Length: 406
Ligand SMILES: NC(=O)c1ccc[n+]([C@@H]2O[C@H](COP(=O)([O-])OP(=O)(O)OC[C@H]3O[C@@H](n4cnc5c(N)ncnc54)[C@H](O)[C@@H]3O)[C@@H](O)[C@H]2O)c1
Ligand SMILES: CC(C)[C@H](C(=O)O)[C@@H](O)C(=O)O
Image 1 (cartoon, rainbow, N blue to C red):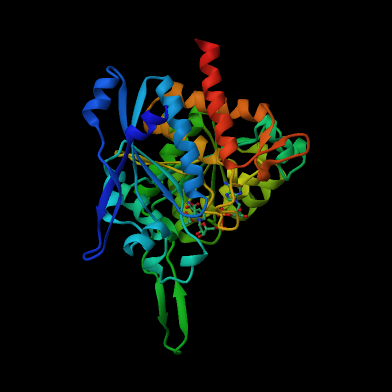
Image 2: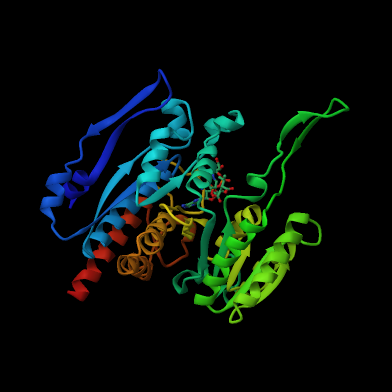
């Protein structure tokens, strides 16, 4: 298997900023040999963007799981690993090198680790690692961010909420990803008429942006338990008033979906009070960012939550919802399950390969059933493992499923 892994890994030279370049240890892909070696297999190009901090640790583990689950379903992957975020800043001076974007854009799907870290925290805004995420999301036009948050039976005791509150929680947060205050104009920092510095951003939504995310959410709810809660701040914000109006107008097209509305401050409270009341939540960019981090703790850890960012066409972007966790980076402490489950979402939503996705989901459950836990989801009586060992155990479970089904 290791040979196949290496053969399929494409490491390309990058030339981005004039006068500055770097070359990855170049290994030419052997397309002909690979294709000849496995006739009849479906092949996909996957862009791997490990990023910073724990990003490379969780991506390396998730890549192996993706490769193995895929190969058991007749899929072959050409992986192209490219720098983004702080890693790219250090190499070529920009957070999203053109070559990295090109590789992502031309791939069939993108798996991203995480971006950011203390080292670059004081950079000017356009030179912050996080800008890579904004450019990727905006330029790939992946406006719909699906963030599932389910309490797995194996992890009820890892939740910070009481068992009876956490047990059975299963929700999908549909976060608008390419609009709102993250991208609205005007924004900036300037000196006002009193000579004082002022910082400002604009929460901006056009009707079509609300409609398209609302449609994704209605469709999502329809395939789940048929309940959609739209979260806004329509008692204060004009953009939210329009949001609520458009979502309400669309409801007549989805009579099978029960629509409700909730103010975001109440939603933050209700998520902790009675999270089981939620099935599908649809909300704007910033509220979705905050509520999904909150929801992650109901499930036990932010290290558990995957995400899929999808547009109308082109590759989807798949990433854990957590960040680069600089406090534990390089210590083999990261929980790789959010990234492994993002790989499952990549297979399901990005490539339409549901069977391979299921293999990964089953393997994660199997690994948890065997009692393996990283520190963030550890509870007494289980076996504490690091990122690598957790990955190795999931890989074993992917394999053992084969033995059971062959
Ligand atoms: N999508 C992304 O790439 C993304 C998302 C959020 C934050 N960030 C960036 O990451 C950096 C750190 O941000 P932060 O500290 O606010 O959030 P974070 O998510 O990186 O970490 C918050 C806390 O959760 C823990 N944690 C996160 N992921 C974990 C995992 N897989 N396993 C175990 N523990 C985990 C961390 O150790 C930390 O204590 C910042 O630069 C931020 O901008 C990036
Ligand atoms: C790092 C940051 C820019 C990002 C966001 O706010 O979208 C993160 O919190 C996320 O959820 O992916």
